[in-house]
Image (cartoon, rainbow, N blue to C red):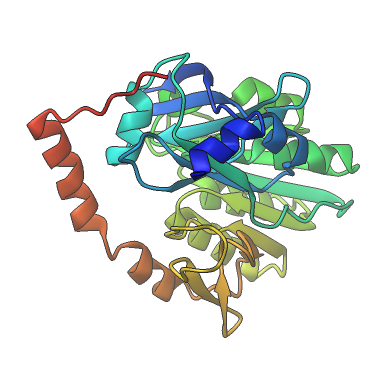
Length: 294
């Protein structure tokens, strides 16, 4: 019996319940996965395969509904796999969905918690913000994008945040710049922050961690590392944290942002970038389309 047959035996169909382009090139997808919905915690992720010929791709779980038996992810169309997801329709079925994976986020009553999100992290940071608020924290959330039209999930974030700040590169919001600029702005105004948590691209994670380091603020980041199996067997997601080798899939994905070897992480994350670009262009050029019927 293969993996897909096993999933069917335990009642996991992985049907797409809804899919919506929330802003240009970023999609929200709700997937039927009752067993995962019962177990997932803030900060954990899933690995999915879009179709029979697809690769395994990790996505942060951005929300879940135990009663409906669904999990929600946000993704940006960047490569072949996310392009396939973007082409799928409601009612289609994913080839495979595995999770929850990774360690849950550290949630406690720290005092004032600042959360920063960019790109997929705007969606992924939401369950952490919600859990931090439920734990009794004062929650400050900062999100970034190139322009205001690329910001999303704001109503849900506002509902679980004491303050929500929007930052954009083009200056179309109240704060011009990135998450780390907003962090510095708040610190310069005398804001006391007891814990910082960031999710998004590795560059944002590094810059935001640097902004909090000189102030001695305990900072956690969710590393965006290359992954294959998600169980620590392949070693693809290894990174150096505090001088020790860690695996983002099983030791993380949450790590101390002041201890990460960012230079090493950037080198490893960019190793297949040219190949990914060529694969995406070739797939489109040839007009290849897999059968995506559910």
